[in-house]
Each structure stands twice: as structure tokens, then as C-alpha cells.
Length: 86
Image (cartoon, rainbow, N blue to C red; front, side, top):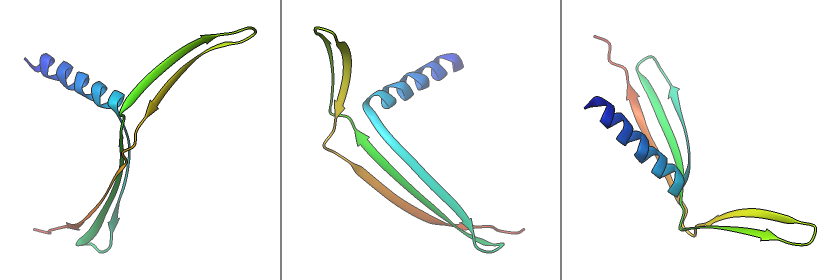
């Protein structure tokens, strides 16, 4: 049962990578011994179309793969980090 779950998860990850281009960056800033700050930014570009072409001519030939998207999503988030000493 566990092996099936891992294979299913890998398939979904591959599907997301084919239909979506994204970049993610973040930072954790420790301000004091008890308090910190977390910042995160995500750029998400879902692909709306894919295309390919193959051409042959006199003296040249080639293959082209194209994709396009008119949607760009940007997400900015942040939070506080609390360190509790027991």
C-alpha cells in the first residue's frame, strides 16, 4: 500500500511540472532569541497552450517547442516565528 502512494505522488508532481512554471524564494530572519520573521514569495505561471513544429528547408531544418500563458500569479506572505523556552 505504501509503494502505491509514493508512485501516485510522483505522478502528480510530474503533471504539475508539465503544466505549470513556478519559482519560490523565502527567508527566515531571527531577530532575537525569542522572535523571528518568515518571508516568502511565489511566482506562478500556469501554461495555457503548448505547441511544437518541425521544418525542413534547403540548407536548414529544425524543431521548435513553444508554450504560452497570459496569466501570472504572484504571492507574497510572511509570518512571525516564536521560540518558547520551557
